[in-house]
Image (cartoon, rainbow over all chains, first blue to last red; front, side, top):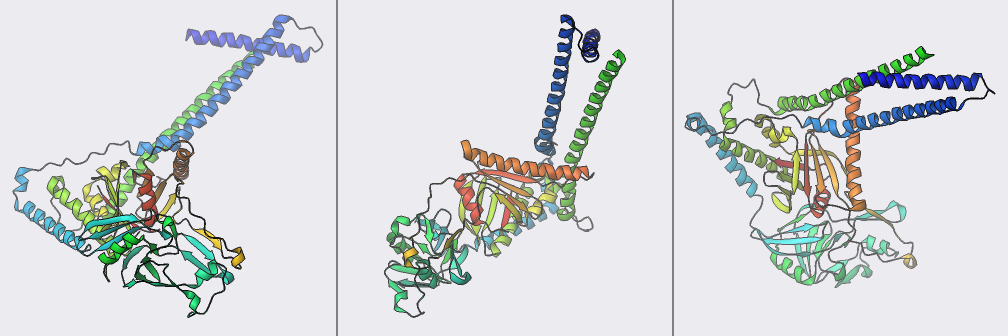
Length: 269
Length: 266
């Protein structure tokens, strides 16, 4: 308290001096101001600058604190409340009751039935899983992984041709089925293949549409024109470069072709 | 003059005290409203998923403090959720907080597995009443919207050449580019799932995730502020935040459909 009073008095004196000095300066212009008056005048200005600066700084700190509080502290307060979880204790007496046994028996039966239904989704048949983000494949037989490696999938390119014609080159995701298996497949070039190279589109049965050799030794058809096949562009394996089909190297294709049957599942994600 | 200065100082002090009081009041009010939000959300969840009080045959309360019963109930909940998702022909995401695994599944087949390095979840989800939370977890969560640092489908547009002279072969894609991965999926039931890459990124990449997170927090603060300024308890979203390897985070984000489904096991 004593200190406060002292500070108040000294600051008041200083302010008085400042105001006096200001009076001198403004009212009695042209008069010679003594050096002590000049000093107190300067001190007064400095004092005001400091006070204003502190006020400004205080305001900034306050606003920053409020901002920090609203963005960071307040949301964490929501999780600060301790939630007491009911104690999980197995009461020996309770477990002997007929009601308990009935409930446990019922829920066990439910879980068994649900597990059985869920496991039924994965058959013992061979299947292949294709990862279009990493361009990898994994081949399974009797639920065991038998081969994995790189592949190439859709490039995520949209080709815009004349007259608002568009083609999106991406591998579809979901569950597919091997619909057919071909040996020494011949690629029938679709329209986009000509548009992409700036060539005129030939008639559907034109000879220029048929290209043997580019799909490798085998092809497994998935429907809608999508296939798993080989490639002559082996350096692109592991990259998203295709028009939607899945390309494999010759060795992997051979194993995949001979492991999967017509009807086998193909999971693409 | 002396009196004038004294009055000024006094007024300044009063002003300072009033401002401090007002700020403290606002902070206290804001905190109270913010802390009320989870209780409001839990009451909503209880009304939606909690036991039906009108039901004649009630389950013995003691069952919910039995460890065997609870573990079976949890298993039943996730199986119900997974079965429902497996019926649809699209990829779904299963987060197992108990095992710290995050799997992508398709028609009952696990197509991709990732290890959760760390996770944080709201008290409602982790410690909430099993009577309410387990029935909620028994049905899959559906994604309503999402925000991310990466594109869901990085589609490139290519204009077809007019003739063969304009034709240029495709450029080999650069697979060495590393994109920082973070995304938030908001579910239709109000739960938000945050997925972050676990890698300690450096420099610019670190800032991408930091900025993404900060932007989200600021948007949330704005939303809270708006509700509270209207004297309303803000909407609370229970959260699950997981950290997984960057490649897995990217694969999962790109594989899940826009309005895909998520199953949670805790």
